[in-house]
Length: 441
Ligand code: SAH
Ligand code: SF4
Ligand code: F3S
Image (cartoon, rainbow, N blue to C red; front, side, top):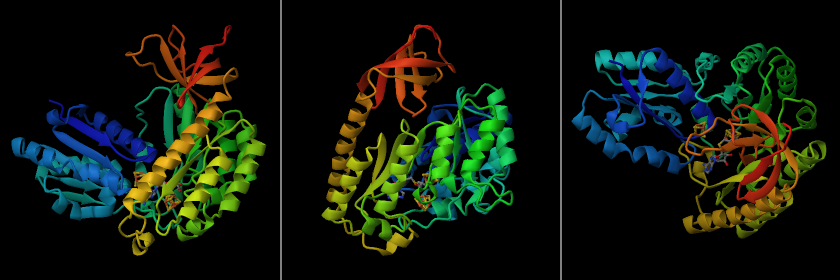
């Protein structure tokens, strides 16, 4: 009988990609997957440390896991990912039902780790490969979608933003050789994947430590020329390394999509200094002005934190003004959450929770109206839409993305999966655009 696995993923797209890799490796070994935690013989959580809330969701499972373990002591329970790296073997004290703790760097060893746990019934901690040059998970070819596929181009982060735990959980910055990337993406394109998402904590720092002397813009050129991918997207970029060469690559390369995710975090230079973001408000606004000039139809999104240590009403007002000035297409916003071991842990967490919350609400409200107004300008225009895999629960409805990564819904009346078509935008519903296929395509 095949052992059944329940795998739940928290956190960012790099974790999604890691989980996909775990699934591929375990399917190869004959495991089967179940969406029901109660049925599973192996329960795995791929976790995120970036905010306390993400951690609480995992710790909150303790009770149910204890019950499962009481009822079925043979069940193997593991935490993978960033929380595993952060807490290491301390995890076993917080969650006694755990059998294994495996950091992101060790995650490709999961099949062997499970073998050991099943055979010897020991508790295993695997966190030693955090800075390993080669990220072995990248060799897993399994993909869980049919149209889009993610590819890690680099891992880790050498920045030192004071609030951020990622450098501690993902290790030092490492880039994959460009020939490897061409090979992987070419093979994905040959398998029929249309939409390639390049992943990294700071993709535009790509190549810094490689001997081949390549930067991110040059990688995009090479992938455009040699990989055969229809669409190439990328996330996340750091403002410090956002430059005209990158914007020109986005403008000129047919496969590279015109969407830039450029986290700003705050609109106040005073806050940015405290965060050690290595950019000022002015630098950021100059970069996005340059981007908009170079890629006039491009879209722009960002990340923001409210209530970081020392944030005054004035700092917050500066963030609001930046939101209005930048006119982001969308923004991910978070309340500041102190992370253990980060430099900001030593700063006072002095913005009351209620203020963090109300500032977040205010920003979200403001951004909603900006996004809506921006999307409304698209009504009546045409866009190139790549359709994602169809969902059986919505007959006749097809969902796709523009090159600027806006979600578009059409009633095509036929299967559009993996196809690219021109769509005329008719209506805006919050973040989604409704449109009609343009006849003749
Ligand atoms: N490497 C990316 C983002 C990594 S984490 C970058 O540099 O932009 C994703 C987002 O989580 C960050 O952009 C930030 O907005 C948010 N974040 C990180 N640490 C946080 C913390 N301690 N509290 C609240 N939000 C945080
Ligand atoms: Fe964290 Fe800053 Fe690195 Fe992004 S650049 S992962 S926010 S330390
Ligand atoms: Fe979270 Fe780790 Fe990603 S902390 S955001 S899962 S890199």
